[in-house]
Image 1 (cartoon, each protein chain N blue to C red):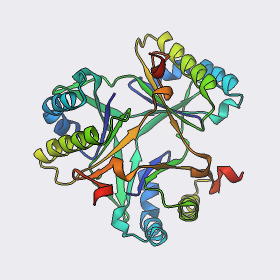
Image 2: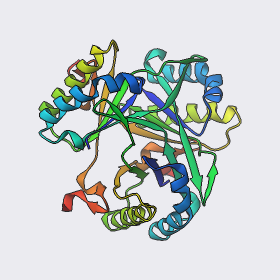
Image 3: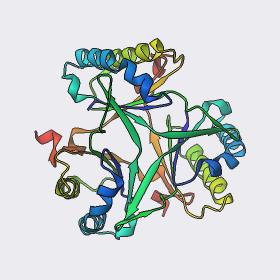
Image 4: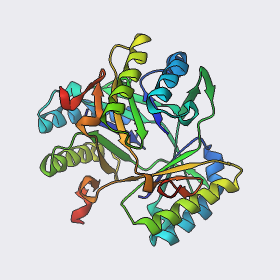
Length: 111
Length: 111
Length: 111
């Protein structure tokens, strides 16, 4: 963690910004870049009887880090995604609790 | 938002009901139909050593709108899905917080 | 429910452990094995400008059952996944509320 779970932006597009974006997020979050994962979720979207492009959306799953860090993460991700020509993107944070997260069977609040 | 994230029902099946279903949800939620997204998440399911059909499931991600609206949304989605011959479906609501949701970098509680 | 939503482990690998793993989880949770679903979410992952294998991750969606049961579920899932040669895995629990979960249109807190 943090996990960036992406929809509506191709893996190739995300690939193009992955290194600078994760580098910046690692600075903001004060953790190693290898803590981050960047997964493109495969979807098929429909609207009013037609297949449509999936709306660009990133769900960021993490432990809560507070409003200031969250704002900076959201703005960095938004700017990088805008930079590849994606004009609109929404970002939601999903908060995991440390007592509900296990790394190789060990509960994170006991590490 | 709201986002309807669907598993276990094909995009073609959802396509067939997308227009009337989203129209009804827009009335219930008192918002434009273009606020909704309808994404089919691609999955492969297994059970007891065999590949099986994914159990029909819709996760609805939104800001909390209260029990009365939630009940009506769940019932509308259920009825439309039953109408295409899907006999069982479960629906879960995932609540995003406005201070953890960003549209083009702007936090929703500040809009 | 519980739902096991898996990334970064192939359906064939999960298939190989699905029967004993779900059997053990059913004992721990004191419910029928047919309450569980096991869905592999299709993803494409990138890191530092390259496509990479998705990091093994299981999100378990359920109603909260408390720390003791949660620990045992996490340890059982971890052990079964380690047994097929996957050396690292992280597990997160996503808690649904009974008043936000509907089975065929009926709210679970009213069943």
